Length: 118
Image (cartoon, rainbow, N blue to C red; front, top):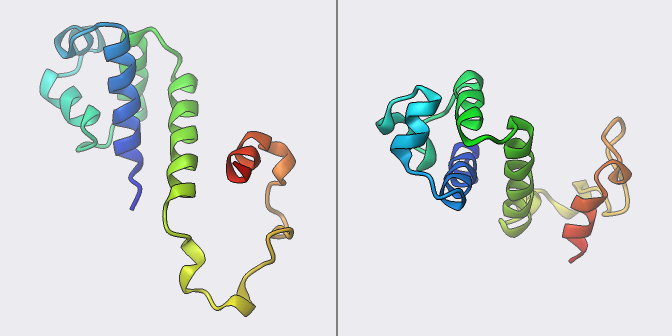
């Protein structure tokens, strides 16, 4: 199972390491304990939106950028995972060209469609 907290922790750690910053430095700036930040980065703790905003502020990156990167990683992980519909009988599945009524069309997120095609 793909866990959001693990992907989020991976992205936060990658950003911190890329900047050459230590856990202690970021935890001090974010005003969160070093141990808790470490658990967030390892995907062991769910971070609140307030805590995420504080960590992003300490890293000097917008929260939207972090969430976008997490979303991209989540989409890739879903594509690599076993299909969710594996247990659904073939006659109950939608053909690949169809969309569910009221769903967001592929044209809204063309980059995801491109990832699936690759």
